[in-house]
Length: 137
Image (cartoon, rainbow, N blue to C red; front, side, top):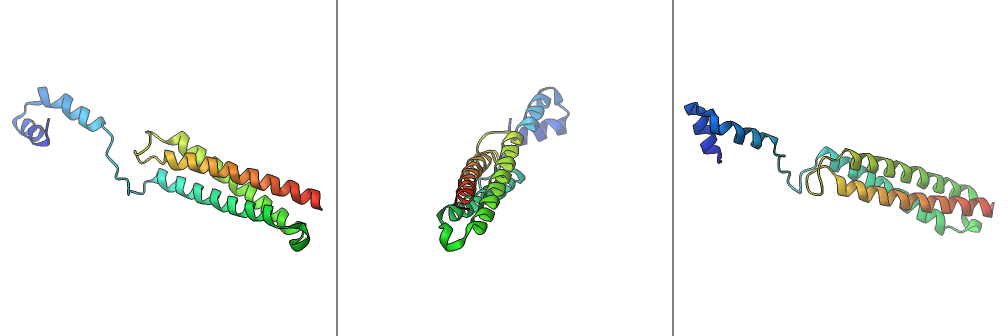
């Protein structure tokens, strides 16, 4: 039923046929544009960026040699990568758990999964960098 029919039925008082259609229309989710920044998309974006920072810092901690920089700097970078990766994975997991619909509904579920994966990668790199700094020291 179109909006024009619903309005005409409401004006004429013919709610017998219009009510189930109107109730069905109210239950339907609102279409979200792919460019709309919803709360779920924002949190998944923040988590993914935090995980990306953790991956970069963890990669730098792995790439530095013990003789050139020293063990203290690499150890701190590895710990920061571990913390950033853990935060990204937790926030991404919360976004995925709280998403109402699938991809494209505005819940941020795709970004949440990306944040979990990137966060886990940052945690692995941070753990490897921390183990390397402990061995070198």
